[in-house]
Image (cartoon, rainbow, N blue to C red; front, side):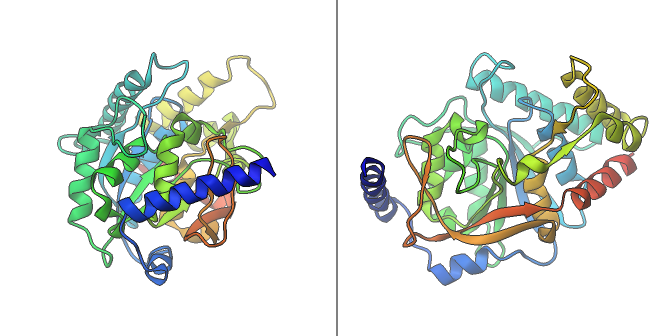
Length: 326
């Protein structure tokens, strides 16, 4: 009963915030925005690139999927774990990693890569300013519901939440695709991307922005590869492929024979490239509680949630594009 009361209190508070801060989108319009689009789409990628190896795969995949995706910018997201001294250091290392990958891909970085927030949200009404946030706002304002900007976030969602808080009207012109949290019926949402900044997650879920979530446990958690597979398809193909293979190899420091590596962030990009590979369903936007769990209220607006993925089809496309890059 206590958990139910907490959920009700949180929902009432969030609806007040929703009503005061964010423009209302007609539900039919939102649901239409959540339909997978035909043809080429415009997107930005928001990534904590140095945190893991899956971000590097996701960035390369997006940039090499030019038949389907036009990447207009890449933002460095903050993160904090053993690979950084604080969120700002994680963001800066991610920024440098993005530049390193662009050099391998022979892609220009000027006016294309932006530093993001150096800290997480401390208040759901106070954005964290950064050059990435301002660039997102600028690009979103130049977009429209008929030609929306896809914002693919594969780290903590601080930059996106801050942009929405600074300019709430942009939710009409963007569609957010987030690899964050776990499936709706998973007992906790303490997944790395979401748990880094719970307040940012609450802002995005409560804002009403058209949102697609590829959740980790039970869905994206199936997206693994092995060293023999990477060796066969990537090793020796080009500089980038060798970098990716060697980096993944370094994670198996115990030299385990039966071992696989998650490259989860690719899935968010894959939904853009070919939505049939990532099966999604419309669900009511969950309430993200302060206890980092989901509560469900069927009067809330709809979002799209991934339920299943075609692992082999995604890897087949990913390996093909990586190996053909010269």
